[in-house]
Length: 141
Image 1 (cartoon, one colour):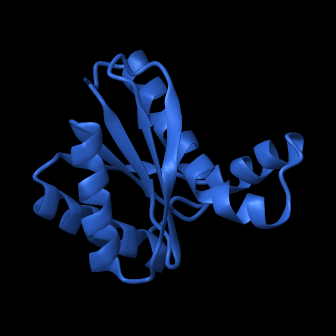
Image 2 (image 1 turned 90 degrees about the vertical axis):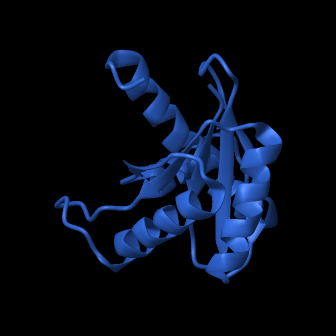
């Protein structure tokens, strides 16, 4: 099944998708908008273009596993996205994915404007890869 992942942000939202065999997560792009409704519409459009059967939204819990304002906003986004798209949407713990994405971009020497343009889609890839690893190692299918 093709899965779309979303790293929802206030100004930029990263998207990634996997192949139908759930082997490889790849960046899809970044939606630049601070309007949640606009981001939902563009995400639904992408999900339909990719024929996604599931959407995974990053859920940024605090390091102590509590739910903060940002996680609540992502939960609201995921709920509205599922209602609008009709595609099952799940929240996935994304603690440290942006930090990890910065590490990957440091290792590949991606800097400046190019870094800003891809960081969110790299974080979405990391969210999706983590979720796919979970699915492979459990009966979560």
